[in-house]
Length: 379
Image (tube, rainbow, N blue to C red; front, side, top):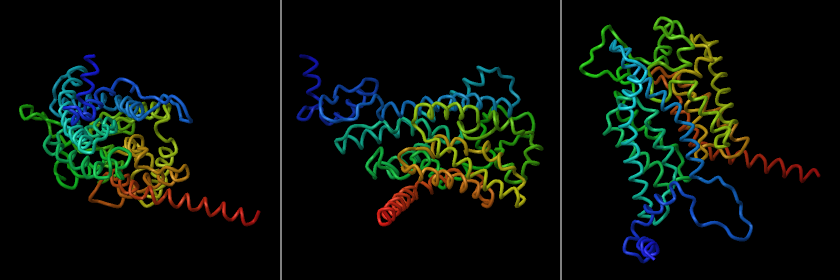
């Protein structure tokens, strides 16, 4: 009786109905909803949006954990501090945790408010977006800037289109794009990627420039001179965005989302192929960067695995996925090699292809219809 009375408060006509979406979101976060099909023709499957999103979050955990350790490692390296493994990890954890708090407080706050206003259920889409955002920004980004960027991305990149599943662009990348174009000094240069406390001055001259920026200025020779080998880039103990540096951690995440069927291997493979092809042409043109280096520098692999494969903003047709992925990888390397003002091209490449993904699908479907019509005429 008490449970019925409590439930009635949040149902239509109840005193607290205005909190219905919020209560429902918390109620179904860890529990399977009680509403199931009883008869008729329905698809019955254990997978739903909540479980898809949780699988992506699980896949992101290795990159997040490594990123936290790398934050502490880069700080110790820059300042000459003699820290052990756990000291580095917990230092990084304390630096990254505020980014997550701001990301989820602002983003989920807007999501809940929007759902209440529309009278709809709160979708789980922001679980992934909120987890992604701290991994693709510098560790030293001011929290108020991050809050403003998250608010912009969620409101104008998602909610105005109708919420989860209706957005055109990846909200996490919109957050980064807002930061980059609004506050470039906090998103580029060599001072934003490594956190150095004011009371811990570096023992020697130190630069926090990323390997991608170094290679863009002087090719592989400059990387060698800076002390970065290919394996250094692969393991990820280098300056960069929190979760984008470790190839091995990203590959672990890729295995998880591919095994669970959440992401498309076609987009991943074609993106890598596009990057290698353009990188090879660039190498022939004298870029000084071997094509395969593009796969381990900057945010290329992270973007390919976790963002280009976003099922909402990527191409939906099977042929379209090949085209979409190839163009993402190719455009990213084109920007890197032939745009001296912007070392990283993955963000712009994915956002641009998000825009054209519906057109790619339209062309693929139209071509398929035309082929079938021709076969019908000749039959």
